[in-house]
Image (cartoon, rainbow, N blue to C red; front, side, top):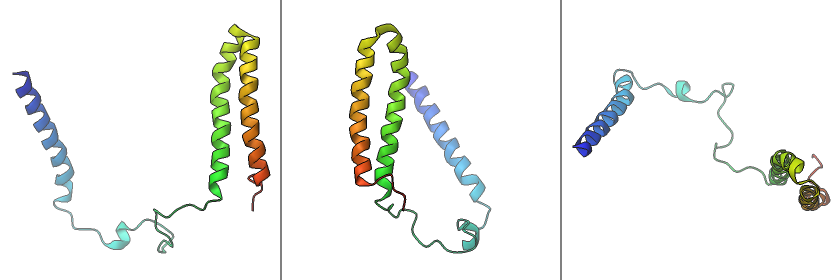
Length: 115
């Protein structure tokens, strides 16, 4: 009995969803290309939307992720520091030392130089 009710609800919801998608497009003509094209100041796009990014953006992205992870770790650490004291201070020191190695490496590779 419950399985039949579940099947009926599933069919009704699927039918309603398909009807809502199909009904508005039934009486409307297909729009022309200028109406469908994305707005780009009247010109056609030079590159495809799925084109790859230049490799020079990846190091800066990795550096941003490193700083974001540092901030995500520091907020809960501030609460734990009140309870544990110097043990939490040493853990944060180790974390910042590891992060500093990554920052020094990025600096040596020239990530901070904007060209």
